[in-house]
Image (tube, rainbow, N blue to C red):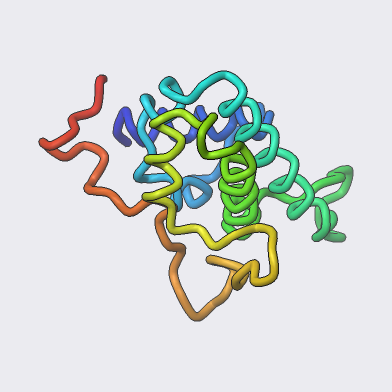
Length: 153
């Protein structure tokens, strides 16, 4: 495991409020994100993104309910589709901030974002939960550890 992988898992766990740890597959879509993507967002943008992602990912997970072979469990584990819907909600939360009031980092992330909209007339298909395609990365950008933009750790 790399430092970037560990950072992604820890950050996603912080956003979702999960202490038990998350499976590796939950971060597949997040590979393009870097620490400065969070650090350079304004406080209101970061709070809007984290709140939306947490709320919608939890709603998606909770809609499935616990399976019968999970005694005592009230929630199933997160799956890729939950993270996909959370990312869509995070994108919508950033889009809801008027363009003139968004940070440069927020505009950069919206430009690079490959997620379909979570709201509106055409919210797109349910990402990675389909057996017909692999999870798609949420950002169109070079490898996060590329020489053009090395990671800070």
